[in-house]
Image (cartoon, rainbow, N blue to C red; front, top):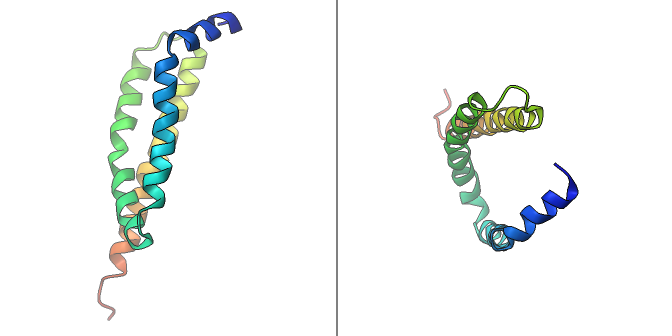
Length: 104
């Protein structure tokens, strides 16, 4: 993939680029308005839902041609980072639930 094909792909998808940029700004604005007391439960739930991304990444990696190393590396990163996100979500949820247990 050379720079001209990358430039052509960007120019043909300018509308999608604007949507992605606007959704980033919207996401930052929404997250900044969430009270800190709700942030942990919401984020731990969202991280647990991230397991769908892990399963999707595994399915897509199974259909990639074995000589397409760039796609395989990106897919591996998606699986690895998604798994970290899921595990982190459950760790945060477990830690949060331990705060509400009665001490013996």
